[in-house]
Image 1 (cartoon, helix red, strand yellow):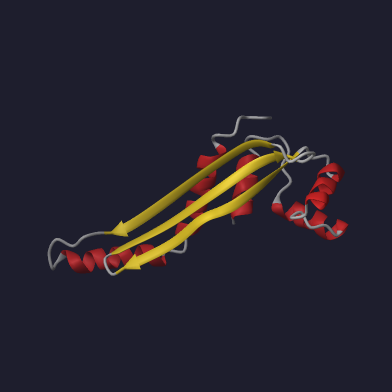
Image 2 (cartoon, helix red, strand yellow):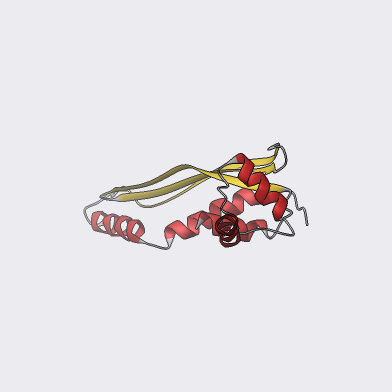
Length: 145
């Protein structure tokens, strides 16, 4: 999900983006491992790509207490020149969301618990948060189109 979101958002700032599906196909066809510096440079030369993007998950958490729930995701990304690994741009951001709350009466206790539980079980939260954190990262990248 993170690679797809990055490719989509990078396409708004950079004229040509090799997405995760294209990269995996090239790795398979050329028998490369882009984690290896030599293979990464070879792929960049064959695809005429002057730079590559690396991302790292800084943190991810999902906390649920009876009346309160929180999700958090943090990413760090860097754009580097393929020829010599010089860092051209880097950014990091963490986003968090929560729901529920401190019940102030016996009547608010089930409501807070229900809100926290619904938030915790919402499968759409993670993709939405990934898109939010990627959007906030890429907005700092200068437009290179």
